[in-house]
Length: 375
Ligand SMILES: [Zn+2]
Ligand SMILES: [Zn+2]
Image (cartoon, rainbow, N blue to C red; front, side, top):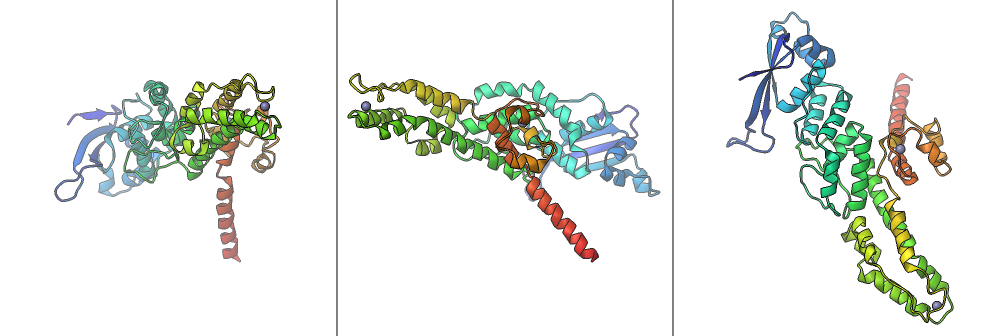
């Protein structure tokens, strides 16, 4: 077996034994998928990881002094990336998306600092041209379990604070999903997922798109229901029938089975004018009303913003003030600290996705427990 030399002055050989996540042999054990030896520096592993420090630390035990250790149940690719990051040497990016969950698993197992991979992930995202995939992902996302989808990009972008990637994925999912949005984790590491409030807010934003669309398309109805002319009934009927014919109406039911992007496209087929004999108020410009609805819905939500979700970056300087003032904040206020430009609703839905209330509740509960203990 050729040794993968991470550091030529390395004083430690680490053998990583990777097991197959999916297969099982006759006796129910997972077969070995790959093994690889790495030449690394003991002091570097000790410096970055309490677990490696404990494994290799300066004890007088003979065991601890050995020059060879075996790590089981790790991913060879993930450990190579971690070793290269820790040794600050040439990085590799030739791994599929599913490796991201294994990288985080290794980080948890060896107590490594997950943010050390932040720049590495941003480079991976760039080198793999992830943005170009969006063009092929189509109008509708159903619960597909393909490896690389916007649903599977949520977690890596979230954990590595990739603001652009996260906004792009959440924007795409809110407009292109059919039904409830969920994330996708292609690995067996089920504990790794975005906070549930993120998914909640994403679905709330998706639901809000329907409300915005409905309010806009309902404008003629309101006018016609208030009218006193003889042509109002026929006009209202024909307007609604057109929306029905192009499969936009009834919006509630249609939205359960179609994405907002599909509905927006169907509205391109809208063509309706009131009869020439109809009164002036019946002869509204329906096409313009529909186009306005399309524009408003299209530009409503930019996706979730990681900066607005970050409770350490309150807009007013104080997280509680942000809460009380969220209706009166102007665009210039809430966008000051964000890496991506976005709309006000994006701020609102992201802000509501913060976890501060629960965190604080838990913290207070803990503090209270300690103080009552000391009484
Ligand atoms: Zn009329
Ligand atoms: Zn923002």
